[in-house]
Structure formats: C-alpha cells, structure tokens
Length: 316
Image 1 (spheres, rainbow, N blue to C red):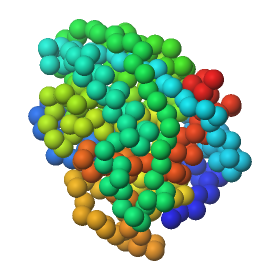
Image 2 (cartoon, rainbow, N blue to C red):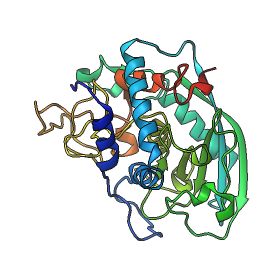
Image 3 (spheres, helix red, strand yellow):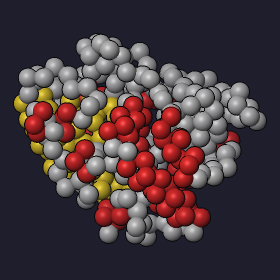
Image 4 (tube, rainbow, N blue to C red):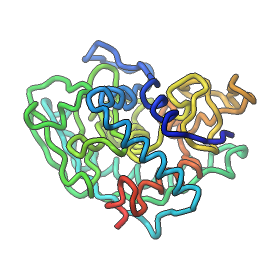
C-alpha cells in the first residue's frame, strides 16, 4: 500500500510528464482489442495550451490532501444531474433513451456498491472496498445530427463552432457526450480544474450503456464508470508511469495497465511485490473484470465536493 506525499513541484512534474499512449491513428477501428482511455493525453494537451492549468491542478491537489487529512467529507448524499449530448450521423449512433438510462443505472450501481459483482472482490481487498455513495439522475438528453464520421479527442464534440454541442450548466451538471470518437478510444474525461467550456465526459456511443452496438468485453457500461472516476479526480491506478502513483494510499502499486481478465492474484514487480488491484475501475481491464473502488478513492472523490473544492457546487 502506498503513502502519498505530494508537493507543488512534484505535482507539476507528475502532471507534466506522465504519458499513456493508447490512441491509434486509424479513426475507423471496427474492433478494439484493448481498452483505450484518452484522458491523460487530453490532459497533457490542455496543459500545453494553458500553462495556468498546472497551477490550478496543484492547488486542487493541495486542497485534496488537506481535506483528506482533516476528514472533511461530504455531508449527506450527492445527487448529480447528468446531461447527455448525443452527436449522431447514423441511426445506430442516435442511441435510444433506454440505452442512455441503462448507463445511468450502471453508474448508480457501480458508485453505490450495488453492482452484482461487488461481492467478487477478493478477501485481500475486502477491507478497503468502498461504497462511494454518489447517485446520478438523467437530467436532459440533447441530440444533434452531424456529418462527421469521428470526433477524435481534441474536444471538437464540445464546441458549437466545430459542429459539436456546448456543455449545459457544467458547474452544476455532469455533461456526457455520446459520439463516435475513433482512434481505438472508448472514452475520455476532463479532470477537475479544467475549463468549464470543455468540462465533462465523452464516451463512444457503441460502448455507452447496456444496449450499444459494441460487443464484449466493453458492453457493460464500465467505460463510463472509469471516465466518471477521472471526472471525479481519480487517476489511472498505475499512475500513468511504470510503478507510478495514483495519489491514493490504499491501492497497490501497479507496474502498468492491466488488460483483459487477469488471473488472481497478479503480482506487481514494483517495491514490495504487492498483489495488484486489477479489479479496480481505474485499471484497463475488461468490463466484466472491474468492479470496485477503494476507500482511499472514495475519500479523494469526496474532497472535490466539499466547500472550497473544485466541484463544490454539486454538493450544495
């Protein structure tokens, strides 16, 4: 288990230097062999475009650490309204209300320990598995027809001038864009601290909810669970570096991303050779192989919603 200590300088280095290259140059991949999340790459591009973002992120890390140390957690249950923006060219991309609602249902199960596989968490991690205790409510569905075959990860889908849809009330609502991303990417999110004009989560419409055209192993709605985790300030569990840190104290140090359905126990070769928490939602395993958040992740999530936190407006 990791001890998390981060200074402003090391935070800047961490945010500026980590890299997770997963995006393919082919925007029309028909089958995705391994999970691809572009959150880290998008974050690094935002850092280059806006040098002040690193300062804001360092401030958020300092606030998060202080909130964790003083046990300033959310009072009561947070209910997050979700606006789903559907960008479609084909009938298949114009996903149904029922499919969208099924994704909201998955989020509610996964963030409230109501998922049927929650009890599959191994005994080794049973003491740290967490009910995050945040609920989601479908607020609005906005649809827009487009001629674009794919949107990529440059946030064009969020910009009206580029044919997309701007976020609705991003300081008080979680905006989720459903579209064809391309490049082998299932989804990406914006961490707290980024611009309100691009805040939210993007999911490839094939992998949203339980009735999408995408087949196993990405058909259980866990892509959105992973990406919403990023939106709530969670990092990839391997820290986007070999034996890196996800800034959470109760998750084992991972060598790198895990894929597929790893056999348990899967040992890390990092210091202490811990058993990796491959079933954590912030790894890259298949949908049916991820089914838990940790208590440390819950505490980290809680810190962003308290007074003074980057998403405090959701907790009011």
